[in-house]
Amino acid sequence: MRIGAYFVVPLYEGEILRDGGVTFGAIPKSQWTNLAKADNQNCIPMGLCSFLIQGNGANILVDAGVGSKLDTAAEKKDGIRRRHTMDDLLAAVDLTCDDIDVVIVTHLHFSAAGGLTRVNADGALEPAFPKARIVVQNGEWEHGIHTNLRTRHLYNKENYEALLWHQKLEMIEGDVQLFPGLWARLTGGHTEHHQIIQIESEEEGAVFFGDLIPSVNHLPLNVISSLDSFPMTTMDKKSELLNVCIQNRWVSFFSHDEQVAAAQISGSIRGKEGLTIDSLLEHPR
Image (cartoon, rainbow, N blue to C red):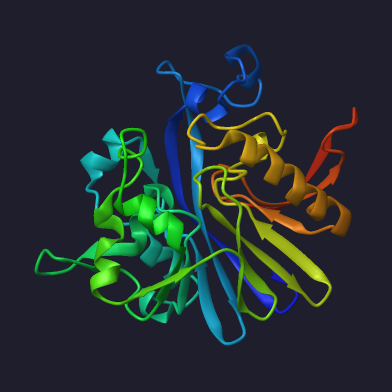
């Protein structure tokens, strides 16, 4: 899909089973089961999707996926249903991990950052994208390194600490234009320093929502995962960014929808008519 001067390709690794109550937060099960079917463990499938952006002479990844460090048994235990590896997904567009120039990480939870490192032949951790600089909010890095009782199960330093030793990190503060018309923008919400990626190019635009709006089922303002550290910030930023997308007819990209990778959103986020979702890109099954 082309957005102005940039071309976007979804890279769909598969699904992960997540507790439905955690996924939909304060929304009662009697309501969220109309959106997603739960198994007998109360779990629902969520997609695992990174995005390749090509433009201005660069190959750019939005998030790195869960990576390849877990074996099949560990993936099954964690509820991961793998369909493809990142290597396979890049090979399908005639690229390798060596061809990636920049990885922009929305945050450092494992579904976004697990693929930043890999285990080499000597059993040591190394950058999975050897030639790429890794763009992360400085505050997110600090929270990923210095976890607390609430966050320690969401972060795993094995996924990113080696990047510091290999001098691959580019830590930013707030909103930064990384390429012409391509921005990393601080939102907070899911984590205090969560960021989204925004493209505004040649009178077209797009927002890669990361975990601020992980799926189309999370478009309503009150649907917020209980994993979000700052739910009111999530609600405010959802309102702000969805209004921008609706008014300007920008494309919305979703990292954790098991079906829809990109959609055009119209309607009203607060009005009785609600939102209309026009799917533009869907994951192959």
